[in-house]
Length: 602
Image (cartoon, rainbow, N blue to C red; front, side):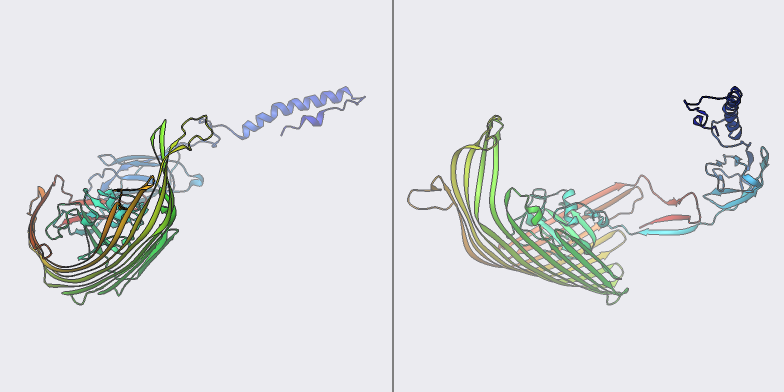
């Protein structure tokens, strides 16, 4: 250590210092200055690489040829030194390898590891010396692979698209249902993102078929799309399989023309439950099964869209409340008989008190604004319930017979009485004015009134039968259904428009309303349906081809019309590549869990 120069600084007031002492002190400083760095360099020699790693040693070399039990060379064998990262080699086409290893301190032995995906791991210990060469020719033992067979039963028909349920769980959707969100990505459209209803290819919202475990599902009739709707019928937490067709579907589906949504619920065999809560509501489900032949599903959903609806163009107090409860019981009485019971109860209320609305239109230098001030409120609510029973009989392999009975009831009520006073004005567009962006002067005023007292009571009951027969290349399906409908409708709906002090339209003698709907209707009708179809899948190694053809009959005694609907669909996919074997490789540090997988195609 070099002494501090401060220790040799003389005070300025020193009066007497001997010259001999000064010479001695100066010599000591010279010794410390020149000897100190030399000692430091001697204690910390710098290696050729520029670091302070100590004295370098020449590595040892392990080389040889890797062979199997029959003496044949093994290519692509990995050779590493256990515990030394970055030290490794690979055998060439002749099995030859060469591996340089670092000399461990204190003369410890090293372990060389030989690995290959087709052979057992081989270990060899060496005590190596600096600069020496060691030849070693290992003989690897062939690995015995465990055979795993994966079987996949592909559906004979491919005319309806299957949607992986697990992949749509986190699809963002303000309506709170991932199934509807997935449909909107597959071509379904909606008038706004808050709507749980959808249209396909320009069709009406009522032109979409929905099936759950074979039961056809109905929706309320008078609910206005986008705000008053509740949950869609399918409950995602109870769903096992989702299939969707955007038109051109088979004869086994009904006569609505837009789309088909086919839902299959789970068959629980053990206990499972979930709970999800948010500021918009919550949902929970329970699965209970005895592990053999009995399963029970229960799903509860509640949602309040007040936070989302507050961002609408019309400001006001939105109070929507949607609650839905579903249950499914599945009982496999024997290998040939299976019974199911499905129930649903849904209560939905929508209350809206509008306050104001402001809408602007026009060009940058000519902006017109319409301000509306409201009085009154809207109340909409409906209560729906559905119950169904089914029995499935499998008398022999490849033959299935299924009977279904269900009933749907809906009580729907729509009441609103809203008066709006509007003011139409021109907006100030001059940036220098204090009232820029505000209405400079008025153009006109007026008012309107929307009034409704509407109510619908609908009751739909049906009996159905479906049959399935599977052959080598043909899959036959047939069925029949009887449906009874009772709908009672009360309508009292009118609109009044008052512009600049007079009613529009007007004839000068009396007050006329713009729109008037009044009535009391009762409709009782019966529908008779039947279908027959075949799906042909010919055996071919070069192409995967399906052909579905069938006919559907529908008679409705309300209009006394018989509809005959023949339907044909075909699909094909060339098989350019046929996968027969798959080797699944795990991490490179361990090859103990290695399997050969054979794919068996059905």
